[in-house]
Amino acid sequence: MQEETARSAIDTFISAFNASDDSYVTALLSQALTSDVVFWGPLGRSEGLAAVERFVLDIRRHPAGTGTMVRCSAVDMPGEWARYQWVFTTPDGGPRLAGTDVVHLRRSLIDQVIVFAGEIEPSAS
Image (tube, rainbow, N blue to C red; front, side):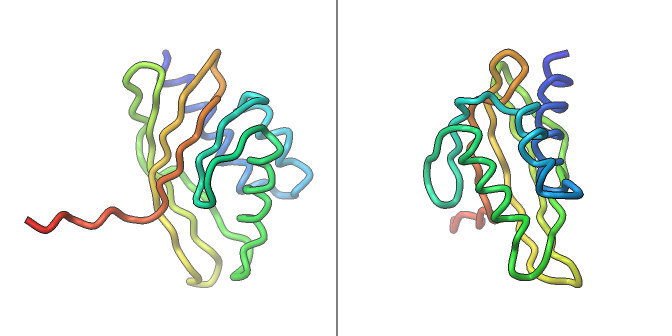
């Protein structure tokens, strides 16, 4: 049951990247995130729904064109933390970025997001 709740919040968060219009982004994020969400993204730490909205809108305005964000793994949830993998692809074979997000849930909403963008290289043994 807990994984299903996490999966729903995560998929709603991801759907904000793919909304048919920018005007839907805030409503989708409000359904997935707490108002005081802490977001650790590629540009550092930010707080609040408005900060995440700015990030999502920036991604939606990618110079290569409007891309598509998809969850490409199951949701793994030990306790109140969950992780999943994602892929962002721009149109016409443009740039592709993959990564892993770790999220914390509070009362069925995401209150922390940690974004790990890019692949992790194998260690040199």
